[in-house]
Length: 309
Image (cartoon, rainbow, N blue to C red; front, side, top):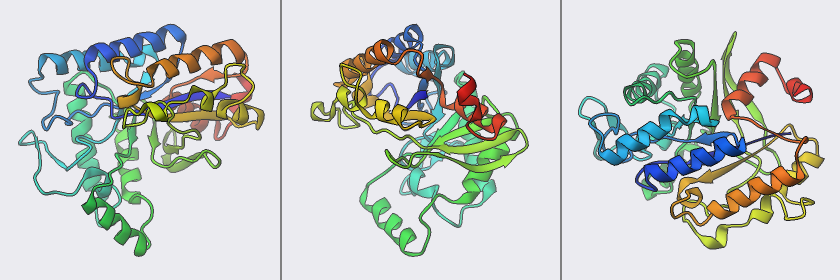
């Protein structure tokens, strides 16, 4: 069974560059593979342009994430309102990015231009993106608009978004030929959905089938539970259940607020889970980046590659 994870909200504002360096070093040493997002405009400006010392140090760590086994997804530019790339600032009184991805009137060209600008900012800062993560939002305006969209039958992201990602992949703007995305998740119905493809290129919603029990975005100690993943004796936990059920993968999601080694309440639990996996599941699981999963799935046109690993 494949193991991996998504980590949202990764930025120097949550925990500094040193914390991300510690995280990457640990993953590299333990052979852990997963994903951590990079939100280049979370400070209200692009950290790829005239970065502060802390932002520069953080970008240097993001640039080495790949060699440490960690993918880098764009969680859009700000995780809030749409960004003005010409003015290098977040626009005022505009739709939030996550909601914008669901607006049915947005065209492929509009999405492709905006995503392309983010990818270009990444290149400016030495960052190559592998995938894409939806930035959820529960503010009053977004909640109201999401309800309106659902009522009118628009329950999923705008399909033009997937096509825009595919077009950019075909132009070589992403690190690889497939683009793993994190939108939906389900402990019981987690699966992979092909959203767009053309020959060797593909865009996939690779759903996590395990939740965040590393403190979530609240950095809440009551939301920390390593036993949820795998118990000390290695006999139970969601990883073990998926393995016993013959699932091709177990992917969980996390948040940098709870996971980071500097002040995240979930960091000790993360290392505990890694140690338990190493102790009890050797030879039964393999760590993979989300982008490696979608690359292999796309090439094999299914999960047949898992049995030959």
